[in-house]
Length: 174
Image 1 (tube, rainbow, N blue to C red):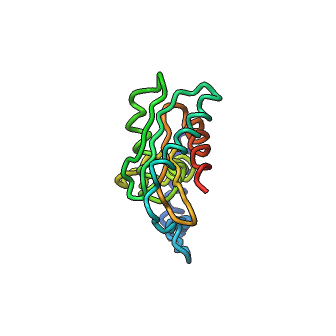
Image 2 (cartoon, rainbow, N blue to C red):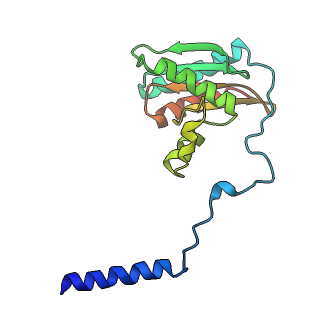
């Protein structure tokens, strides 16, 4: 008797789905067309070595306050490495990651947290197919006078630790 009840419910459900009462799929948020182009920060002159070293020093000072061991990289507006420092004991694999975060932040003119949020919160997995993306916070553009002059990337801690140190470094740029 139970099986017959189940079978009847299954047939009724199948008939309802074939009756032309198809459900309308939810709107795709990726179909939205914004009026202004997002992250449209113009490129400026490349960051100077002195500015890059100041940003790194601030990021490292913040990391030291918390006993974090980080790698910190600064790239110019063309995503070319300008300066890098590895704190004593910082994870070796994070050398490349810090540089990748800085390059991605400069190339895409946005914080790498945007990519992390796209995947973790919005489930926009297509983000993973874009060359040069790193979906981990800790890459921040360096903007001076409304123009992108470079970016800073930190790695070696958790993403949130990397981000805190990077923000301290980015704050040195006026």
